Amino acid sequence: MRELPELPMGSAVWVPDMKVPATVIESAGTPRSYKVSSPKGTMRRNRAFLTNYSPDDTQDPEDKVGAETKAVADPVPEVKTPPAMTTTRSGRVVKPPEWAELVYFNLV
Image 1 (cartoon, rainbow, N blue to C red):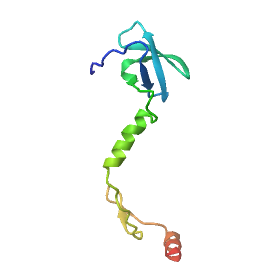
Image 2 (image 1 turned 30 degrees about the vertical axis):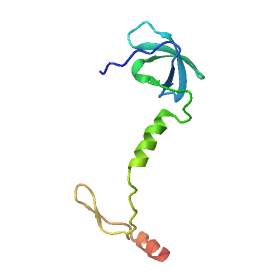
Image 3 (image 1 turned 90 degrees about the vertical axis):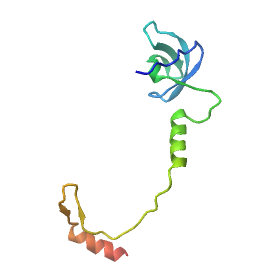
Image 4 (image 1 turned 180 degrees about the horizontal axis):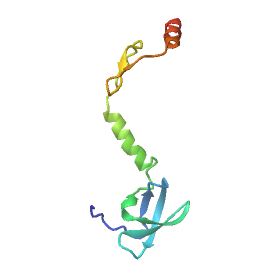
């Protein structure tokens, strides 16, 4: 496991499983554990489950990671094709029911 730096008392942290900001109150006595206070109450968390957090941030840390990923990913154009003979991973041909063909061609 990767060694994480210790958190000073009073520092702001993000608790990912509760999705709330919190403040470090004290060390919990066991290695890498801290007592933190949040709007949902006081809880004990391992250092691995606490992320440094700046109260000035208006966006959740989890949302920032998703936003970075979304900005980098190129949009994939959607290709609409009529239903064709498809196969499963094992190679079996999937045949749509007869009524599906009637409905599809009447809508087009």
